[in-house]
Amino acid sequence: MRLIEQKRKDSIYLYFLAKGQRKYLGKPDKINQEKAKEALILLDTQITEYKSFRNKIEKYLYGKHEIEIKDSEYKMIFFDMDGVLFEKPWQESKSRKVAISSWDLLFKKLGQYDIYEALKKNFENGLYGDDVDSYVKWKEATCKTLKIIPLKEKTFQEVIDSRILSRGAKELFQILKKSKIKTAIITGSFYRLAQRAQKELDEVNHVRAHCRLFFDDNGLLKRWELNKTDYNHKIEIMEELALKEGIIDKNGHPDLNQCVYVGDDVNDLEAFGAAGLAIAFNSQKSIVKKAADIIIVGGDLTEILSPLFDFEMDKEKISFYVSKDVKDEWLNFAKTKDYSTLPDFIMKIIEFYIKEERASLKNIE
Ligand SMILES: [Mg+2]
Image (tube, rainbow, N blue to C red):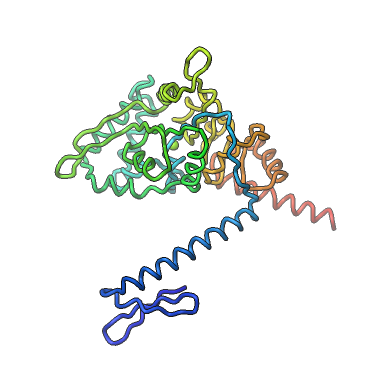
């Protein structure tokens, strides 16, 4: 299947080659609508076919199994957004690659990343106090800075649009929609990005986001609303929403034991402690991985389904796309080592396997 642009004299002629046929599509500025639509349909069919091949090969390669939707012991899942529903962009720092948030990304785009780093340092050093509200003061200072810079709505929207949904996010929500499990996003990021997630994912039941920005008629940042949705406050929201969904214990109190929390960073630690099942998704931080019941590495969000529906699973520490016995070996390896980044961990595991392989070859000799 090919699109050919043939140049003759001063004109360009477009042809679409498919299934041994050559279709003339017209000139770029005078396209044959009918033929072009036909070509699009052909392409779509081919893409669907390729996708199904891809799924099949993936299934053979990684042993991915179809998830059977049964009743789960969990009634609700709370998702963090940055790094969980949306991939975190990577940035080269002095010593290693680190994942960055939407806030980082915005300041980078504005060419003012140093300012944001300074604000973040202030927060980490306790300059905004050490109570549960301190992060709100940090973000208040951050928004004031954005107004001074000033932030244009167009720039902000570009950052929102640039974020990429995590692999498997769409599939996951399609599957969850078929189950009885309720879903919610609780994020310390931007309301507008959460809105995008809600629009693009099938049925997110609740959304709570930290920062909502408002722009004036000239498209410049005018004011902002900061909601308490991060750190400790994530628990309050989980309780509020669980209650709303009738997930309660025998005394009528919200029962977070029947809830799952999926997060990736230190601002999720409190929520991890409160949820019945804490899942660390693609986390780079050992403190986060240690606090989780399950660690998912590899970036496919549908991986969280197996602990939800697989009754045989006794809380695995690592979920990989590998066969059970390899997984057990890796698990053992992971238990005794602690690497802060995924690339680090993978490198060490490869080294470990090369060594093992060589050892077995030596034995044969
Ligand atoms: Mg996050």
